Length: 171
Image (cartoon, rainbow, N blue to C red; front, side):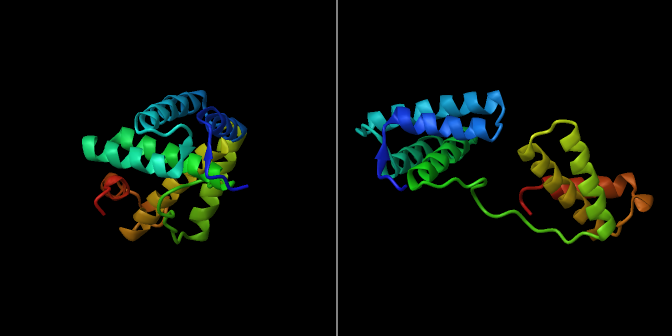
């Protein structure tokens, strides 16, 4: 059910409950609590008595103008998007641009699925497995792009070049 605003306590409780339901780590939940409390303090300083999208948007704009787009800004934005979702009565597993899709060989896809099964049996959480699957898919995609579609042909140079492509955020 869509709402225009909720008390700070209610929205934070809803957010933390959703995170715990999805097996977020204790560190992630604690960070969320810390960041959401900061958001609430900033909103109160701007004159907002409850959490609402308008106030949260102003918090983001003011923080960005004062401090630039740093890691804390990214955390603020993520938590605000989550709370906005809760106001709208929805939950998106991911915010931001959609993930890239990688064209892999059947053998590569099978190896990745086996790796994900191993991660699951080792007790990794679904979110962690999804990140690992994405990262290994991207790596294998880049390896194929530089001429190596089989483990037999991998060289240190190829692995280094693929890793640089995956980690270079100025692609």
